[in-house]
Image 1 (cartoon, rainbow, N blue to C red):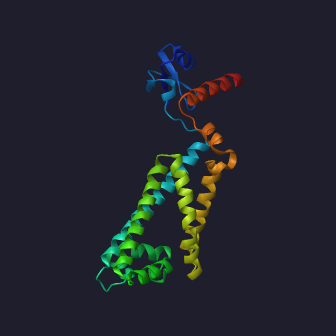
Image 2: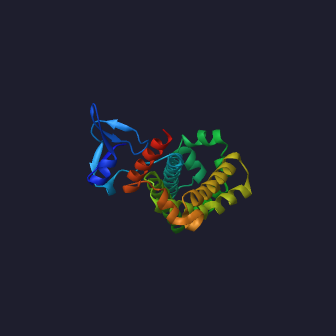
Image 3: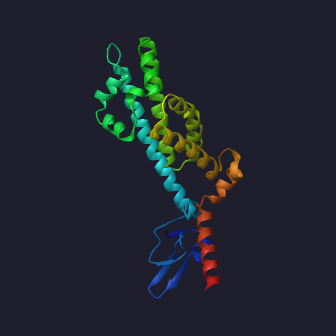
Length: 244
């Protein structure tokens, strides 16, 4: 990860002349890499560089993003199936089984009995009430699905607002998962609840949300980008030279 700053102060400290020509210091490991820098520009526009725990944290964030994307797609699929129930005698379970044929075997594999789902049962009762209720449920499912997809995109791009949104939205729907567990306990439901609780706790603490663990000031100090990334590279080199 080499970068050539326009400012002479930074460029001098991050480059060296070698027998094979100029070499630029990697902002991640502080090693000098022969050849032209990968990119150049103002120091404040240097690319973001992740180190150690930050790399692990990004992997966890990306996994959460994928999980939110899958959940959002499924919820939007449920919304479509729910809307198709207008004027039909089929139940939501029947629509799920026939409309999403791949979901039923998957649900069987992970131990999710669609017919015994308390939430699906409540949706069925609501759907049978009136067409206005059906429309309201469809819109609610679409909104929730869109929320999940928004979280997925924001988390993938490592946006701080997405971390806040994920914590708030996940916490708000934990009571629904507890309600499902009150009817029947399965490894899938229990696992999903534990994952969501751990995800909320991890995001709040690791990402310094809502003032915890040092708050936004600590989060800003941990983010290596621009001059901070260049400074990190210079410090890494100084420490290496002292050791050797």
